[in-house]
Length: 106
Image (tube, rainbow, N blue to C red; front, side):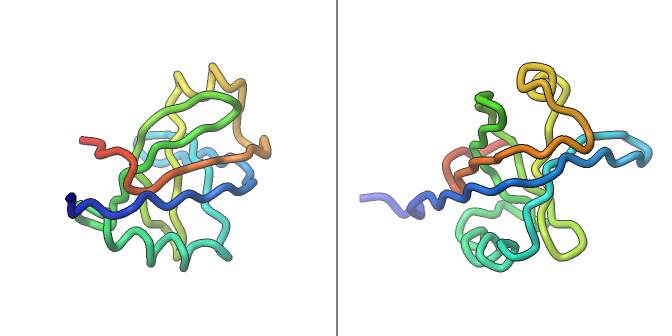
């Protein structure tokens, strides 16, 4: 028997954003109407600072990452390898499938 929580899956559409901070990066924001459900499920799998490990898929490309809390929702980071393989950039609407608790990223 294991104490690991059962994985929770979410699928949603969102527009990719480009954050132009000190370390520019692309993200797929979790829609605000799902943020509460993600937050509740994340309590069992978060490993600190509100960061949540996930296994995700965008444009047929599977990857592991960590959600980051931001402005009342979460951001799914899209690194350059994922973006190039999925052929997505800022402003593109993508379908994100993600499973919380499926992978520990670290």
